[in-house]
Image 1 (tube, rainbow, N blue to C red):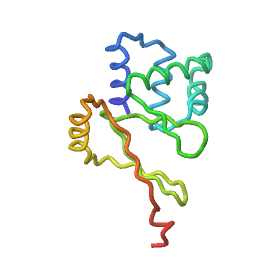
Image 2 (cartoon, rainbow, N blue to C red; image 1 turned 180 degrees about the vertical axis):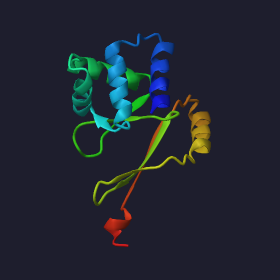
Image 3 (cartoon, one colour; image 1 turned 90 degrees about the vertical axis):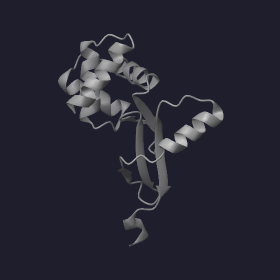
Image 4 (tube, rainbow, N blue to C red; image 1 turned 45 degrees about the horizontal axis):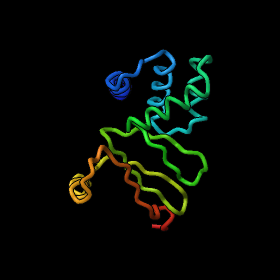
Length: 142
């Protein structure tokens, strides 16, 4: 947790943004939620420890972190975006279309695909969010 918090804090500072007390609280709550949280849920978490941090401050910080490629909003049929941390620029999910269960996995086998796509489109890739959709073991009745 400390490494993720330090990495996010450092990224803000390296990009010329101040690490205010409110931003520190928001980053801590985001990392503490393990990076899967809606904006409204994050507001609630932040206000547990820092009741003076406003809703718009949380929203603006989420927008900034998204612009910097540190988090990404994902929409998994719940209506509201959930924000996920991009560890080392990538994040991976298996999403069950039967029960909506989300399984995270760390194995990243798309580095070669990224190189091919980057070269083909002359596009500099900074990260990726990979989601596979299917049916989990329980929904398949295995």
